[in-house]
Length: 270
Image (cartoon, rainbow, N blue to C red; front, side, top):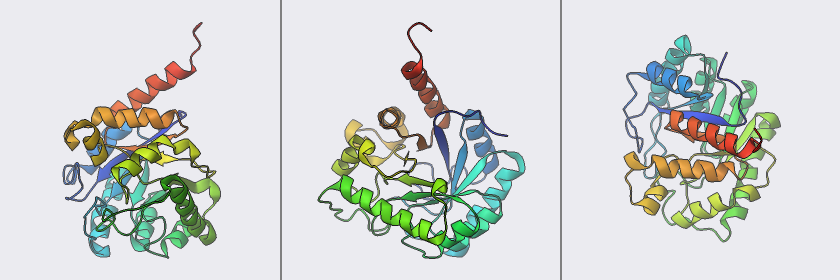
C-alpha cells in the first residue's frame, strides 16, 4: 500500500513537541488525522519528532521523548498505511519507535550524539537520514565558521555515513542531508543550496528548508508566510538532483513537484 511511485519523495513533518519553530503543539492531539492528511496529500514518509532541534532549543529526557513519540507512531500506524521516520538522536527512542513500526531514523547529529544509535539502526534494518550539523541545537548557531562550507560539509557527512556503515547499516539504506540551518550562517545556507550537485557522496540527497529563518532573511516574511520561498528552494534543489524533500506543506510541495517534473520531462509534441 502507499502513494504511487514518483521520481521524488516528500517527507511530511509531524512534530509532537510544543516548542518547534513553526507548528509546535499544533498537532499533538490529532497526530493520526494530521498523518492521514499528509499521506492523502502525497507524503511517502511521515517524520515524527518528539524533541525540537531548532536553534537554541534544549534537550528533553529520554523518557519524555519516548512518551511523545511511541504513542504517536502507534496511533498513526493503526489507521494510516504510511512509512514512519523517527526524528531522534537517541538510540533508546529509535529502538522503541522502530519496534512500534517505524522504518527510518532521521538523525540530525549524524551519529555524533549517541554511539549506540547506528548499531540500533543496523539491528533493526532501518533506513537512515544522516544529517550534517555541528555542536548541539542549543549552541550550533554560536558563530559557525567554515573555510569551505561545501567541502567541509561533504567531508563531515562522509564521517557520519562511516559511523552508520561501520555499525552495519547497508549503503542502500542511507540518505544524506546537508543540514540547512544547522550550524550554518545565512551565507553558508545559500552556498550549500547553490552547490548541492557538488556534494558528490554516492547517496540520495534530502533537503529540509521548509519555512526556515534564512528564507525570512531573503523575503522579510515570518515563518507562517514562507511557503512560496520554501517551494522555490525545492525547485532549485530538484534541478540539482535532489529527490527527497522534508516539508511542512505536503500538498503544495507535491503539486509543485508534479508540475515541475511534467514540464521538464514532457516533449513539445506531447
